[in-house]
Image (cartoon, rainbow, N blue to C red; front, side):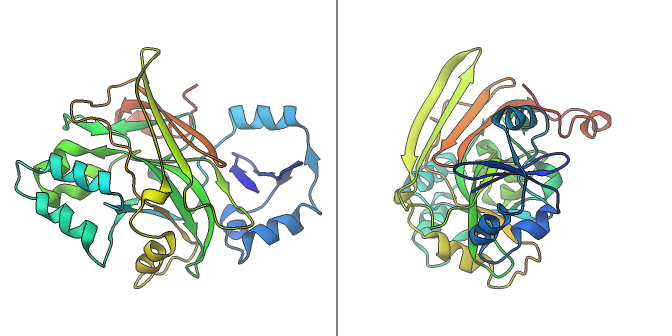
Amino acid sequence: MKLYKLREAILLKSDRENYIYNGDWDTLIGHEGLHQHLFDLTRQLRAISENEVSGMLSTQLLPPIGSQEVWAAGVTYLRSREARMEESADSGAADLYDKVYAAERPELFFKAMPHRVAGHNQQVYIRRDSVWNVPEPELTLFINSKGNIEGYTIGNDMSSRSIEGENALYLPQAKIFERSAALGPCLYIPEKPIPADTPIKMSINRDGREVYYDETNTGRMKRSFTELANYLYRECDFRHGCYLMTGTCLVPPHDFTLQPDDVVSISIDPIGQLVNAISYKPTLTNTVEILWEPIF
């Protein structure tokens, strides 16, 4: 099952049919046993055609988030540990990332409130005060209010490597800013947990030419999804659930930084593809007007 959040409704896609649900996003995804609930719901909903679906997705698609916070896990892959150590070598903080990779307790940090999250075919931002900006493709968990993993989406954890590398205490500035997170294109709710070796692919295009491509799979993670979710929910309550980005090991080379108008494409089967164009944050007066405006 896949849920697409639209401007005026929710699109539910099953293996065979497409349905429109006119209800509240938070209430819908908050159901315990979400896959079974959605399956039962299809018996009550009106099926729509593929042509209707295409039109809705091209003009009405929003990020698959309601009132949920977005959190992230760091240094969950060996390659991520190596990259963090490389970027922080001059500051003398490289050992921090080696220790957190090996530690019992994972690194977890707050990433975004819903209003700072971009969706599929929308812009994400890079910082003007950073000389080294990168995307980080991450399988993202949807965890319900009881701490159970009910679904998955694709996440882009936009990051400033130069700011974090300068001082590890600058992590919030390196990670948290307008449209520093993207989720989409949908919330995927399978009958069984997603495979432990789920493939992740990322490409970056500049001026119509691919300048970066790599792929990996979640089987390279040091920690399990349930371990990360359990630590996050130890002392936090999430009334409407929470999204948790699970880390990345796809790291562009140290001489690469994003530029405005670059296009980042992240694919995770069977969720789909999340595409975002790169930009700087516009002036405050324009931000509200373009918040949900598609880029393509």
